[in-house]
Amino acid sequence: MSAPTGTDELEVWVDQDLCTGDGLCVQYAPEVFEFDVDGLAYVKDSGGELLQDPGARTAVPTRLFLEVIDSAKECPGDCIHVVRASDGVEVAGPDAD
Image (cartoon, rainbow, N blue to C red):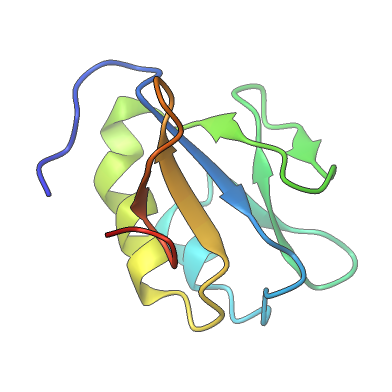
């Protein structure tokens, strides 16, 4: 897959019910992912605020497209969903084609 261009073209969210807490996502993209006190990964908004609502999405900065896509592909829990902002189609993660 070639990375899209633009700042808001991809969004990402984490399904905490499937998160195993391995932390690969936090290693790949610490500006986007962070652990909470429950040991599970969550996404952060552009201001660094942890988004704890189930299914909360955040925009992926263009410069981090590949890191976020790689985190979804490598996630042992298959819990990271990367979607196109324009239509919600999953481009990386367990539901990607």
